[in-house]
Image (cartoon, rainbow over all chains, first blue to last red):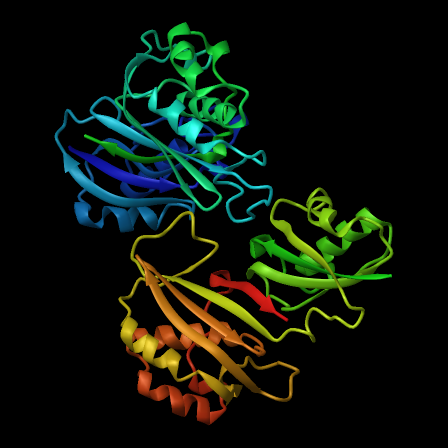
Length: 246
Length: 246
């Protein structure tokens, strides 16, 4: 039995998220990857992922792990897997890891990027990969607001209702905003993320950028530990899981 | 009666090209834009385009022209049109032009970009916007081959069979290859393009990059005026109409 760690990229547009769901919700990344693994190995394999991305969320560096009896040489795994995966999911790298490795529990930090298109002009090529905000945004204020999130906090204000998780303390290592033309990137790296956390942070920063909230409000939004104090949840399509570190 | 010139961007993935076709081939950009114009103005308007892009070919700067009795202020045209266009077609700019203006016949030059992904790793986000070539490519040789195309030539070797055009002499003003990570961009600007010309040039340059043709063969391929001497036709998805100049 070998434990494998595989890095995946996917365009989440056509999927009901990572996690296997009742068929009514449509295909999931986990379901499609599991089927590909079974086709390749003849074994029944349900992979676990570092981040259980929502419907419409993308990944450039999702990490999955699973055990297999397969004798496919590890260097050939990406090519073999890509030959049975659809074009919107790709295996980028594979390595053998210790049996105790778990894609989610072993992760030290994850990096998500949220992309905002700040323009009145739509971008036909980015329509599934960014959130278009037509209103002018105060970039400096957004940056200031983002900086308040650095460090260890109770992020209850940035956690969607219905999350089963009890402890809401996480540590953010990077909270950076950068700008490239009309695009604004929010890069967040943390030791863990709550349900919808990046999207609520993105929605709150846009509210700050539009002036409906102030950057100076950020500490009290955090302190309130109350979802209602933060801004709206930004749409899934702007979100991408960039990298997971172990 | 006003003559309008509108700049469009579109993702050509879901369309049977620009030109209206029998319904069996699926929707066309021209058909969808015509329907949007009719919805907006109540008039029957069939726009003409600078470049009649093929199925799967994209545009960042397609230009269309048409006459209208509409009193929509010209500055409001892009927003108005976008409100009735699907998300994969967008109006970027509008201006009033002299009655004699014709999007195709008035064009001085057009700029097309062909994108090659030179990697063994697929790019899930670029799968509809680039041609993946897994084989290593000799970039310097490709660049040398491209340079031979500059200037005025008979491009019959780079024209697909079945083209109704009689005269095959065109002038290429720019024939540049550039590299950004795994992406290779071929930028071609010319006073006109023959049927499949950019895609046959891209296919020929990739053949040079792989070594099945030499950069030194390019002058004789041109001189032969014979489609069989050039390389294969590169896939439509890598092609994008970037800009049209008047």
